[in-house]
Image (cartoon, rainbow, N blue to C red; front, top):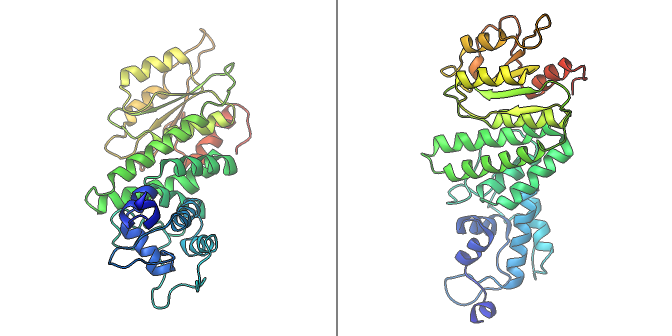
Length: 326
């Protein structure tokens, strides 16, 4: 009870909010979003109204609101004598991607010129706020559809986290892992849409030795969104297993994902494109879609396509079924 009366420390508040203490101090210095009153001594104490203000700050930034604007709104939610809606003089502004430089748990992601939803997702990822990421991902899919949600929100954030991980000596591996899991969960949930199983399916698989599956999960969900039956086989599918799946399913198209040139297997792609199935006298072969940057420089043979992105892949496959491109 003594802590409730006197307020909680910055460290305790940081643990409650899921951010670093440095992030909270940065917000206070840059935006004047500190405790309404200060007790004697070196340590700040945050009252229940202060905590509510910071919770509102986190909620707004995780929704994509720029930090300066979020701070003004959060301060207005708590009456503060002598408060100002302007930034503190001489403090500058916080980086648009999240907490200030030097923050232990709220480092900056170099996103560049991206949409507001992408910035909100990046902030939630750095805070390891799974609930906020789930909400933002679902909102992006609902508002934009799968193709735009992937290309404009999910993929740019994943790339930024990946770059940060590589450049910081694995310090952001937990951010990358949690974000990837949340994106995968959102895509798989979207892929549960009812599809037309009366038509030949689309098979999706990573080539042998290729473990990266998220782009294929995005394509699976985008095809399902259009009512097309997609069967996802995941990462590093052995050639023998892929051949067996093609012969058993009789797909209209087979999507082969390769992330790097070291995993691209053009002989395998040619083999799949030459596979025939169906009744004698009416045998057919699948369209092979070479997806991913690993196929860069490869020359597609007859019966193959190499789309430049998710939207083009969805359009090409949709036309096989007589559906208009998205």
